[in-house]
Image (cartoon, rainbow over all chains, first blue to last red; front, side):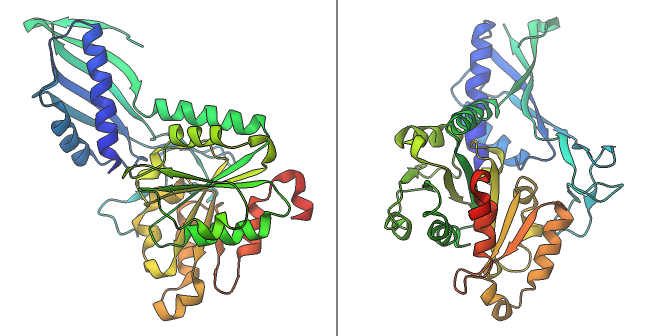
Length: 123
Length: 230
């Protein structure tokens, strides 16, 4: 349940920004989460809601945007979306680090993010 | 970090940011790595489910490596467990890290551990992460490589169920292969699954009971300067 420690960091950091800008009430927080992380959006929202009570973030909304994975291949020069594993047990195809063109290992250049994008607040 | 503040009607304001929540840990992990590099120490982070055999694999590796290298083990557990005895009685430094029910080690805890031991006397640190195949993925510790230990007793779907852990690893140990037949698990299929996710990952089928594969893992971990003797 690493979502709880991430939610705690998120709320602490938003409170710091809010304080710096003289915000009395935070309305909405927009978060970008990379496709390659195993941070579960629903669980993070649940943790967020349990942490924000009685803070300037109370009743604020957490919006989560998924940042798609992008990979690059040092063997054939491919750059773009990863190859997906359709045969996996998940409901959705799983991103792999197998190059879609040459089959060798690729490196991720995008998809590991977990970052605050926007904080919307009332002064 | 703040790029723009945009006023909108109803006096609602936006702060546009790119503020990473994982950055604090990533920064500490880099500091750990710099400290290790400075002392010529290589660290490996062992991850795997509860009961996959991380502690036993590490104990067997210590047996094979302790005469050639200065070696220490960091043992992460939710509470302070006493399952490190087979390792500690081999006469090497062991650092217990209790996460107090946290589900993963983080770079801060490992950094505190690094301050507790004499790095000058070491070549190698084996870090045993918390028994969990999901949470540690997002939290690098400063190790050179990550090792995932899965065992055939966890069933045939471990790789397909936990792809993220494998994407972040360089070495995979498929443990307890002496039980593969009894479990009706095909080791070759698990190897294929790992390579479907990441073709260049090193996969070593192993058994702590028969000793199969353990010398090969020890060779993969042996610091480069003494590779010829390892």
